[in-house]
Amino acid sequence: MHASTIATSDPDGTVVSLSPARRLLNGVGPNWFASVMGTGIVATAAASLPVQWPYLRGFAEVVWIVAAVLLAALALVVGSHWLRHPTVARSHAHNTQMAHFYGAAPMALLTVGAGALLVGTDVIGAQAAVRLDWTLWSIGTVAGLFTSVTIPYLMFTQHDVTPDAAFGGWLMPVVPPMVSAATGALLIPHMAPGTGRTTMLYACFAMFGLAMIAALIIITMIWSRLVHYGTSGTARVATLWIVLGPLGQSITAAGLLGSTAAVAVDPRIAGAMQAFAVLFGVPVWGFALLWIGLAAALTVRTLRRGMPFALTWWSLTFPVGTFVTGTSQLALHTGLPALRLAAVAAYLGLLGTWMLVAVRTAYGSVFGYLLRPPPVADIRNEIQLSQQPQDHAVT
Image (cartoon, rainbow, N blue to C red):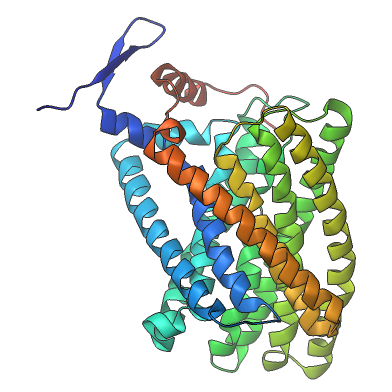
């Protein structure tokens, strides 16, 4: 029995036939890598908790394996499909919503790599874990720096951005360097003493600044958009939780870099970096609590109005996970029991949302509604638009 094809037509009447498999793959965009991020952070956050309990380590190892397998599968499927049909990748890059989620793939690589060091040593061995983390960190860092430049450039020169367009997804392409800063800190102790270690430490702090300042600009725009235009009332509301990502990840990065600074720089500078972990982390943690309250209230409000399930719900996982790891770092640096309790409570919340979103994603994948691709005409129009000269480029 031969697979049937589905015919559709462009505005000019040209008939385009796509096989069911091709249409299915067209629906798998870069936003799917958010599922790897959300799954991987469950494992790494568990390993970072200041309070451990029986079987938590084993649970984290299983979740990390799931994240690693999911990453490999998505990289193979999406990568090979984009290589065979580059028009699909270009259409995603020129889609004002989807383009920002190109930042998800680098963060997925970095998350799985960090998990290799934190929980994967018992699974694949210490040496293999370090090598795997170095590989994924290197690829993820280069890719993340690339998205942090190219996607904003496309926004400035080619995307048609309306005054009310700002949403949490805008943070996705600029946050990867912050994840590189946090996960890079884990690799510093595995480097030989000398200039390399010092360079790595300062490079991580530079990426910390790159992502943090860009994120603060975007968060301000999101706040302004909410004040002037309100929420969209759709599944996009879930992306408000992405704001927690740079907040929690910056606290995590500051804490990890402060902890490892002593092996890379002069004791005086190392002491200042350790102090920075607290002086920076606690105020940002306070704002993160404010944002959790606002995002939760807006999410509940939209759910009551019938917010449908979509892949944007994965925004409830990775950002919350970074809040867990950031709180764990503050608990480590301050020794406060209240922060240890807060880290455990936040992790339990993360587990609940992760299980909910994972089950809904599996259901939506099996029944196909999460894999619906954009119309072929829309893809053609996006590509034609990208090939036209733009008259609103920034000079």
